Length: 269
Image 1: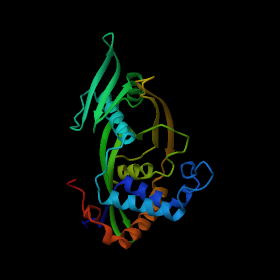
Image 2: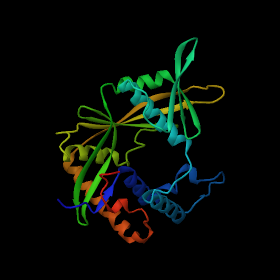
Image 3: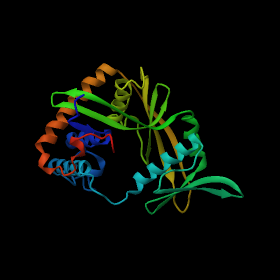
Image 4: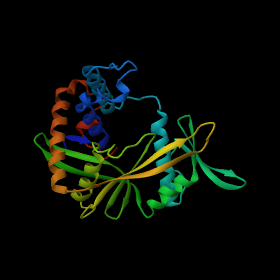
């Protein structure tokens, strides 16, 4: 068996896609100031996105981000409820919040942040994902003109032939995650590896969080569903195309890559 020449996970492709779509960000609301002028030019946005991509490949440490850690904590709470267990993460402490001796919330402490979630939204999502296999590692290979690529990652929830990825956000509109590559990579890996004979649907289960303030201390949320059907042949073509674009960029910037894991096997990671 040939050794894969490249090992790539979905977040890397998402970051590369963001780099490819840099020009679209120019018109984003965050890039327009109160006078109606652009804060950053298309070139400046492209340079910023490329730096972030290189940093992700090189696994450059960064300061904890509250929004990201809030999502990590929420996902772990949901998994704990589904599997009826305590957290096994060393960087995360979870405990119950009680009012009049009745559980009303779940507190998560991670990287110096404290998040108090309303127990109702945690249970709602856990009930929706009841019976799921949580945090399932999957991987598979795909042929490209540059050689074999190994794709890999952890699926949040697998329920029979449906893949679910839980997203937390403070703002949501339908289609927000349309350009994300998880919906292609995870079903592809499941089928290609033989773990599943078919994947009927990939769903981003989106939790729009609110609260966590002095006025409303518990973080509550609303659940939205963003489903996508899966076609293995179509996805194989799409993946090959974007991977070849990515690898072309990768080889053009090889001198900037200090962490060589992307060029080797991930079996021991």
